[in-house]
Amino acid sequence: MIAAVASIVAGVVLMVAPALLGYAGSPASDVQRTIGPIVTALGIIAIWSILRGARLAVIAPAVALAASPLMAEHSVPALAVAETIAVLLVAFVTRTGGGATVATGGGWRSLLRDDGSC
Amino acid sequence: MTASDAMPPGWGTNPSTWTQRLPIVVAALGGAAIAAYLSAYQLGWIGTIWEPFFGDGSREVLDSPASRVLPVPDALLGFAGYLADAVTGVIGGRSRWRTMPWMVILFGLAVGPLGATSVLLVILQPVAYDAWCTLCLASAVISIVMIAPAMDEVLASLQHVRRERRRGVSLARAMRGSPP
Image 1 (cartoon, rainbow over the protein chains, first blue to last red):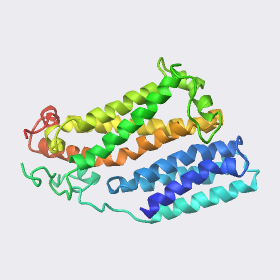
Image 2: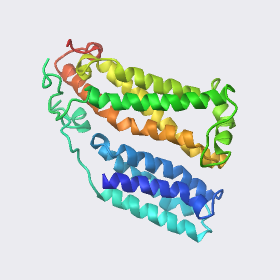
Image 3: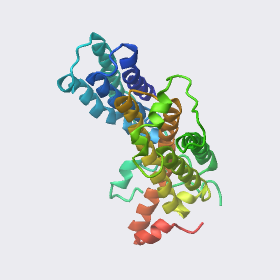
Image 4: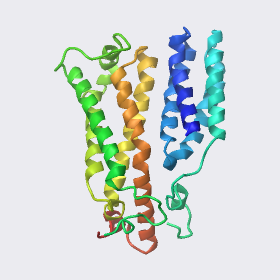
């Protein structure tokens, strides 16, 4: 749950930072406003134990965020603040929580196993 | 039928109970109401749109070229999607993960892509038009919130279909479901 909330916060930070910190319209803001909704959505989905693994999917957008200075100009110092907060939160997310809290007949992995567990 | 009969093997809860499904259906109806309101604006039936936070943001988003790419306004498609979620959510009883797997999987297919499309539209709003739309965001949150609660029932149905297949039942028959 904490991990999911952290992911949601990270995504919202990315979405609102360009307007709050004054760099809306820059190429970097486009990167953040693209990654932000994805991270937020994955965080919301990961609140439920059945899709807890979705929290690990934020790694891909986090890598894209970390690489964004190579793709878009980062001339505003505030960018570093927003992106650092987001990357730290995402790093926290991927190391926290996990596992279903309710028995689900072996979960999604049961569909791949061939041991007759489902 | 007892409650334990309706429980999928190895599960701690039955994902097809009304207490599990009704919140999703209510959320879908809420999303449908928002989408209907947005559609009414896009179709010209109402002249203004409620926007408490982003000035002319809603107008810019709802009047944008992207919202008219398809023959019908995008909000109308959202309305149809939410309605499909609600309808596929209410059909079937508390054992439908076993008696109507096809319907549960259809439900999952209706809920999942709607959420993914919503995320794309949330990205498009600020990136393409530098504008936000409050009700569009609310609709997106609703569609994303519905995904995970719907997926546990989908998992139970997929597990059931897999068990049936292992017993030698054809895929078509397994998808049709077992008798109650």
